[in-house]
Amino acid sequence: MSSAEKTPSLRFRIVAVALSAGAVIYLLAGAAILSVTWSFLSSEYQDFLNRATEDLAEEYSASRGDVKMMRQFFDEDIEEHGADRIFLMLTDREGKDVLNACSDDVIRHTMASRARRGLSSYRISKERNSPHRGRIILRVKVKTLPDGFKLSVGHNVTADEQYAIFLAATLGGAFLLSLLLGGWAADWLARRFVRSLKNVSDAAERIRSGDWSVRVTPSLESRELRMLEDTFNTMCDQNEKTLTELQTLTDDIAHDLRTPLTRLRTAAEFAAMGGELKRPLPETLFEQSSDMLELINTMLEISQTGCRIDRTPREDIDLCAFLREMAELYSTVLKDQNLSLELDLPEDAVIFSGHRGRMQRLLGNLLDNAIKFTPCGGRLSAAIVPGKDGVILRVSDTGCGISHADLPHVFRRFWRSDSSRSLPGNGLGLALAKAIVTSYAGTITCDSAPGQGTTFTINLPLNPCTG
Ligand SMILES: Nc1ncnc2c1ncn2[C@@H]1O[C@H](COP(=O)(O)OP(=O)(O)OP(=O)(O)O)[C@@H](O)[C@H]1O
Ligand SMILES: [Mg+2]
Image (cartoon, rainbow, N blue to C red; front, top):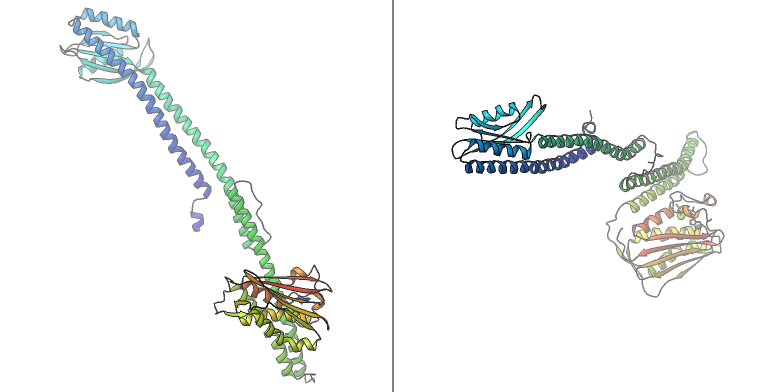
């Protein structure tokens, strides 16, 4: 059995906690009700017993122990309170019944025997015979009179005690009922709550077994659960997107490596069979392996620039001077292709703290593309616009442009428009440019219209916090 199976289920815990809390509260409230009721009832009959005993004791003293007069007082009390409510008895020093007003033999015998035992108060609970059937409960107070006689006054508390028992039984019954109802309600709630969690867990399990299309149907149980489900679904969307991208990327890499490898193998096969190659094999070998190396290096550069924080020291680069140097570097190619490059630079230096090599790769890729996709006689321009918090770099051309449908894809690794597949390249230049700009916490955008040229706009913060 796994440790997860040994742990009690959430549903069980919720029900157990709800029931325990409910039971404790109920028991405390029940005990409070019972004790208040009982102390009220007992104070009532205690008062009654005290009053009756003291009155009769006074009358006994006033009549100097006259039994005949006491008989009269007993009769008056019986008349006033009822023969089944009050029970009176006078016993001598030996405990012999001298006078009594007891309507019941069982009570009379019990009171006489208890008086002999010298108790000052006690409780009698007896089953009676006819004419009164059923159980009778008395609270009896015994007062020793000055001459040693004992006056016992009993009060019928059967109704009071039965009421207390009834109350306790009712509270007990209600307790059991509320335990049942509370348990059912807690279980109902817990099941709904757990169902949402289980949906998420089932979906995660299905994803683990390879089904990435699974999503959780949002429930309406609670805001927090809804948030969990939404977050889970968003996470699944992102994971699926990343996975698809990764898959496409792997396919693209495999595809782009296959072409130079096939060329190499064909050349090697042909040479092995003794065929005469147009170009010497070492030349082909060098060229194709350079292509592959270039592709792999660029891939590595993209992933390193995009994923890792570069700790290498930065240097202050004057972007205006830097762009002039780049223009100088490209002057021969531009001349060869009959292209012009216009620079629009501010008078003052624009200092950016970065890596010279990376900035060369960034602007180099944009200029390479501008040159590659602009026909002879076209115009290229590069501008720097300093701002308060950052600097804008713009590279434009009057080349073939990019269609509106293709624009969202230009920064994707290995993406190339259909028309540019015949030209050299791997479709990695712009992906690298984007990774470099992102590493400086900047942004890069592309505006283009087919036949009208393309503009890449880079926004670099002057105090980048990453990279
Ligand atoms: N200035 C531009 N004008 C027209 N199309 C462009 C321009 N820049 C990029 N593109 C389009 O975007 C695609 C991707 O550009 P990217 O620089 O990433 O790849 P590439 O130039 O084809 O190859 P690589 O840069 O790896 O040598 C290009 O193939 C082209 O279709
Ligand atoms: Mg390129």
